[in-house]
Image (cartoon, rainbow, N blue to C red; front, top):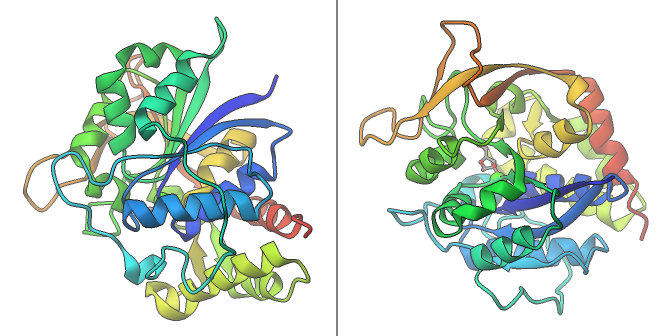
Length: 313
Ligand code: BDR
Ligand code: CA
């Protein structure tokens, strides 16, 4: 049976790659829907990008639900310096007639998950701040029974990217992250420890840009923006954080990690948004978070290239 997934995202260049890799594997993944959240860009832009991406990738049938416009307790702090003014670098995707579903994102997500047949569960794949997932658990706690696990991009066992200890998705909404991490559900944490090394080289980007296919060229353009106009200018590899989640679900054998107790720092101090991972002792039964620590990067890169180059216009 196909694995059922729900993608919650803030596209976002690397979110866009994750969506493409998932859509390239619809024979193995039943994508129940995609919800947008404010993060890399405003909710209008992330929702618009999710609609345009699913249309461009030939997946008009995947419902897109508009999620929260801001984190639980604060205003959103978008990242145009990483993802550009639209969220997708300088890439201009074709306009689409597709509209979001009429219900609020969290209500729609609950409706779809609660309608799963008896005994069936889905995997949540959050790729942005955890606002929608926290609201889902608070408003519809019964939905947890329909969730097998949460495979998310966020946090780090060591270090951060927005602050010395804060990773963007968790830092943007630590209160939401705390609700999700204490939900009792199994979590696979694809954090910076593994996502920083999983990315495209300039050679990969050249191949995408020179493809005869529209999809590969569009993604080449997005990644080119990262290499030319962001912090990645000086680096060899542009991280594609969010796509690690989908890759782990399809190829867990390419990754190593260990279960740890993870707490979220919601203080107002230097470490706000830190995922405090307890390395000190062997994993215990009650540790619910599998923290990924290592990946077979070449296999991951080849998998992503195959997915992107495989979309034929
Ligand atoms: C995360 O932050 C966002 O900018 C990316 O889309 C990714 O989800 C990496 O820290
Ligand atoms: Ca993201």
